[in-house]
Image 1 (cartoon, rainbow, N blue to C red):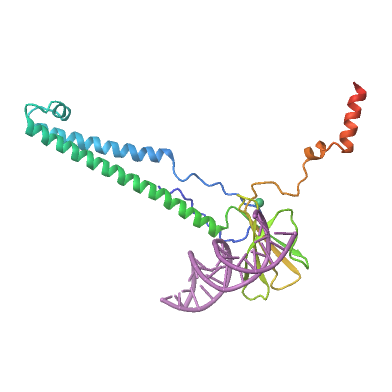
Image 2: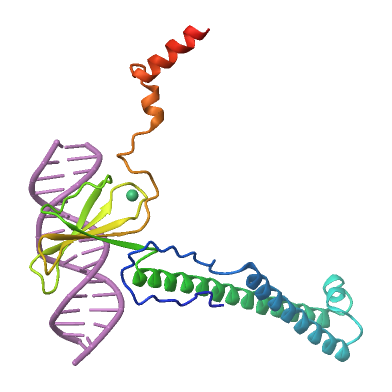
Amino acid sequence: MDCLDEDPNPNPIHFVEKYIVDPPPMDFDELSNYLMLDEYDFSRDHQDSSSSQSVGSSSQNFAGGAGSGGSNGGAASRNNMQVMIYIYIYQYLISLLLFFFIWDIRNVEVRRNKLNKVEGGNHRVAFRTKSELEVMDDGFKWRKYGKKTVKNSPNPRNYYKCSNGGCNVKKRVERDRDDASYVITTYEGVHNHESPSVVYYNQMHADPNNIWTLRASSQSSASS
DNA sequence: CGTTTTTGACCCGCGC
DNA sequence: GCGCGGGTCAAAAACG
Ligand SMILES: [Zn+2]
């Protein structure tokens, strides 16, 4: 049931990019195992009770009692009542199992999120740069969302988040506590988009006043 | 008016 | 429980 591989890396900062392929939270085999086990339990229970019931009364079965219901009204209604009780128990067990199933999936998800948070997501890269200004343009748009003072250091630490929608990359910028001329930048996460500073070749080619476009069109006209 | 910064509040884990 | 340290939220302010 527990599909988490507990591999907490004690190193909080990975200088090499690290990718973790998470296993799926739950196999379909386990799901089918669950449901099959429950169904098998019910059928066995049903069989036992029906056999014991047939010993007590005549050779009437459950289905027959539910179908006729004319001559022997008392035994049929009792049989119906028992069938309904079994159906209720069955539904109760099914809902209970479903509840525990969903609860366990949710639990695994919560634990994975906690593990990811403690491990720093999928990967984390740190740079140490000698720079006077700590606002370095790395090609992405960042939105500052926090500022905290670090222990044993007079310099604060700034928290940034990628301003692209749906991109959950964060970075933190702080000055080195020993050598104030260095800036430590820590990136966390993978961008799900291109850098906005990338100039696409297609855009350059689509410009009608581009020298390459003019040359290509003149060459094509001359050749034809 | 949309986006970003500021900044105190808030949350959470951990040690005592 | 309580304080501390790190991380985040969000309302207001600032910016363009
Ligand atoms: Zn991004």
